[in-house]
Length: 441
Image (cartoon, rainbow, N blue to C red; front, side, top):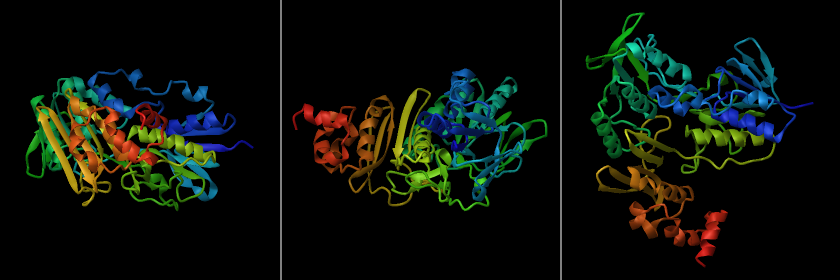
């Protein structure tokens, strides 16, 4: 009898798993359940909102992907999970039996608990329908408020500014991008946004969305100050979608806890993507790094293990790259110490190296016991070094011998040759061995 694999979620992790399952098992029954009809890239929604991409350019799978791969796609929401019966209950009344189940339910926008937040005209920016709803209001929108200064919030603010909307960003935290940047680098981007006509207010705590049933009128702060607006976008981060786990024995912390094979605590159930709390290579413990490439890789690895091919997940680490108003920034590893369920912790750094060699150029490297644990690079020139710094960080290489050079590193791996030779067991890949062989070491 053909095994039946059921995947809940059709974004990066779910579609990657479905494709991997089919590639390795041409005869398996594969069912994907999703409450969205199409498969598209969520990180590109802000570019769609800004008018830089059309809707068709959001698709990372062709419209006939599931049909072509012989995969059943059900447009519904999973509302119940019964591991003891190996079944999933759907919003359309169906009950699906599975032999192996993958939870790829992703994450949902974190809305602040303020009066009126459910009013018509308040949007997240996590789904295509969010962007479409905002676009539908643009002809009558002169002013917008973005609640939250996270990556999604600032990308939404920049997109709305591109559309000619007056935008104010209200941030509860002491500085913007508090999950991505340290305070010094965040101030650079706050200034850049202000210079481009986007107002930024930090330590601004919203208490109410004002308006009527028909329209919103503004946001009121705890101070009593009111910011009039026609539309509100919430960009305060996301939380893993774990509602389906209620009443089950599946272990969870912030997200679904998985082992190095992406197995949950319940037999035949796996998890991948933004809902899965998998190993972080820097911390050495379960963590969620809600990144598109991580979700794709986790989906692939989970599928291999569902097929009993015993593939270990090597782990992930936080790394974000974005460009605001022409200025690029990369943040990686433990570059922030932010409160919250997945924030940094005191003691994760014991030394920092910092440099501002030119206007618009900023470099900061975080060290722990002479190994790199995080970095922030702002501007065109230092970003060339990101690949080299990431290699050193991932391999947990002691950099004491080149500490003075770290802030000046470029893309040339040759400068790392002495470290590669000293740490051969950490550089077993062909390209590193060829580099050593080429120079005759």
